[in-house]
Image 1 (tube, rainbow, N blue to C red):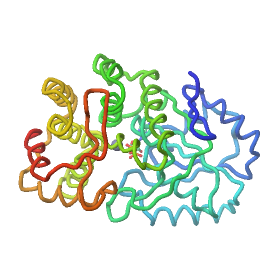
Image 2 (image 1 turned 180 degrees about the vertical axis):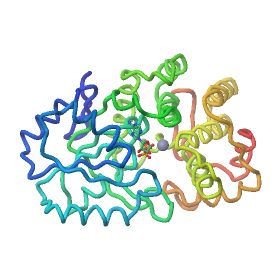
Image 3 (image 1 turned 60 degrees about the horizontal axis):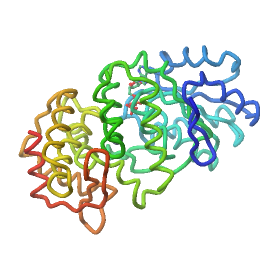
Image 4 (image 1 turned 90 degrees about the vertical axis):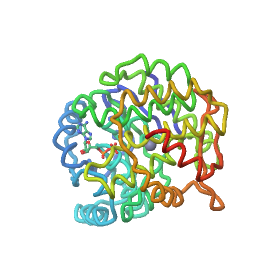
Amino acid sequence: MEPLKNNDHFIHFESGLAPLNDILAEKKYSKVFVFADSNTAEICLPVFREFLPELENFDIIETDPGEENKNIDFCIGIWKTLLDFEADRKCLMINLGGGVITDMGGFIASTYKRGIDFINIPTTLLSQVDASVGGKTGIDIDNVKNMVGTFSLPQAVFIENAFLQTLPQRELLSGFAEMIKHGLIADATYYQQLKDSDYTNISAAAIYHSVKIKNEVVLADPLEKGLRKILNFGHTIGHAVEGYALVNDKKPLTHGEAIAIGMICEAHLSAKYCNLSQDELTEVASYILSLYPKYHIKPKSFEDLMVLMQSDKKNEDGFIMFSLLDQIGKCVFNCKVTKEDIFNSLMYYN
Ligand code: ADP
Ligand code: ZN
């Protein structure tokens, strides 16, 4: 598969990490670190070593898994570890893991001694199709996601289906929601192909297609001034539901499960504010409901969800802004929606 170009780096697919050898030979890094969480250190590091037996000299920096550990305290620990290893500005950090590792590893690398090189090897479907493109790094502050971070580009990204073989089904479905989103916002044919496919056996070709869609959008609008906002379809309500479930439920939702709910609600808004037809709405809602477990949103939580939506980074002049579907495969951004209609869309999901 042809690599995709993003600015001056490449996103490589099914390359067996071979181009990583070339980068190492060319850049002559003073030291190489692999940053992983305890799961990916155990499960993905052996696969990494198998791909790259030539790379013998590297140190492993391990952290605890999970979004709750994507915070400044862990960063401080890792910056100190880098100092203990006498890491200078000519060293390389390879982030091997899901979105938590690539977001936090990218942030640590982009700030350590004002920035060292890093390479991302996303090992979850979600991080392969989403966090792998766009140069956003970040950490959470008090459970508010990605409150602090940088726009920093990696030296390269490697997407390998081999890493997905060990991923639990729930994590696969989480990433699949973003793929459905890519079809809905930009490519009706691709959406149909996903519908006809089996999410438990996602093809490298489908992953490639999703990354290509995201890459094109991000290149056209790297700093999210306009077009890039279409990637937020399903996320205005989805992020609020995700944050609410995290604080109030014993069994929080995955990102994809929350975005699935958000896409149904925002498809409902799309039928009211844009040109999405009733048939398309019904079709999208029933497809998503067939994949994701039903989650009941208590009407008494609606006000709390509004508060969460009001703190969304995309808002302008106090309005909650939505990216909505004009039809399947076409998305428009900067749609102002009333609170009443947001509540109606939550009722529609329920
Ligand atoms: P994301 O934001 O991409 O979902 P996380 O970094 O939170 O990513 O990863 C989700 C969970 O999956 C974590 O517990 C992580 O350790 C684990 N994980 C990541 N990659 C793999 C893999 N290839 N196989 C099994 N588990 C994995
Ligand atoms: Zn998302």
